[in-house]
Length: 291
Image (cartoon, rainbow, N blue to C red; front, side, top):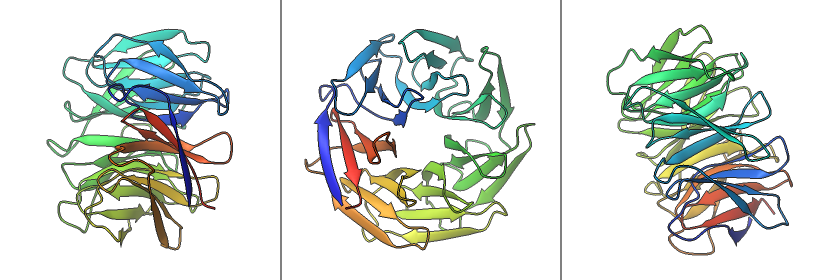
């Protein structure tokens, strides 16, 4: 595994989450400084200012050709065009939105960690909320599944949730106690993959709700986020182990240390250049390839 890093901010700014935009640039949140960053690999990074302290957290490409992101501290959903124009949409006080993903219905779906809801926002800014059937579940990351539904982690409820586009919710408890799932993403095999930050495992759930868990070599590594790479494997960050990991759909696991200690790796995504890029909260992006 080959890993190189590129500084895009100071060590007090972020980044936290990352995605590839429709303009083939990397877009990332600078969670501590209230900014959104953009990088075309091979060029200089640029940033777009938001309200300081709004806490931009997870970012995703929307169906309208813009980037959408959660503002965890400000309880808002944000939208930024590829030209850098920003719009913001208020949620109820105390919502604390975290994960966000484009749904198959042309809307954005997001988690409200403190309000214990799944939210839906249209590209026009109309918001609908769906209360979870489990109290204090702390819904975290969310992804569009292969079955036309949205799948999300329920960190405090130790479960994976599924919500249809008409709001029907199903809950799938995990076999491992206190697994505390966080990151989640659709795999290349028709299943959904997730990380268990509390148990040090990678999980796979099929559309019928069957769960398989793969223990990591370092069970204390605290895996945080997961995404399918351009090579057809699942890539994940090990926040506690300061590593980038890779798991094939057959369950073969490899990992490599980041070049600098204490890098605090969080979100990651397939980049526009055939590599996987990870956000390091200490101020850099990491470019990762399997070779």
